Image (cartoon, rainbow, N blue to C red; front, side, top):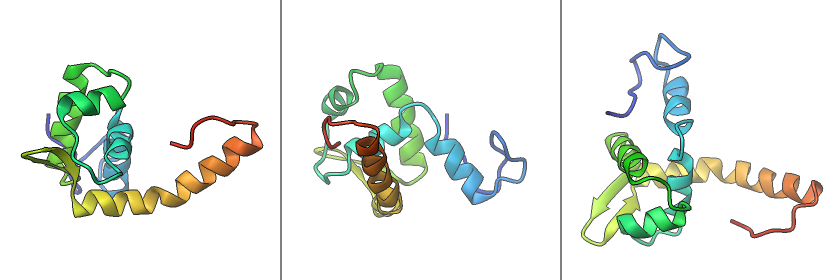
Length: 115
């Protein structure tokens, strides 16, 4: 399966507006988690990435990685998977959501890990 593309219909949008396409891609099971686990900039092997993602199924991880590569968010190098510049830009755009989630979690009494 290839990643959704702007200009092509996706779930919830017949026009394929870029925001709708991005929401479709990022709303797929495990997609954001994979990107989040690559945020530190260190390459991750398939096995390491699977462990970071709570042992998600290998078939889903393969499918999501293929979609994220096709979308230009993740690259595969000799040492493993890394975010592309576009993937890093996306995480930068999500940083305010992370800050909000931490404040919200604290207000709800969450005292767990930070990541």
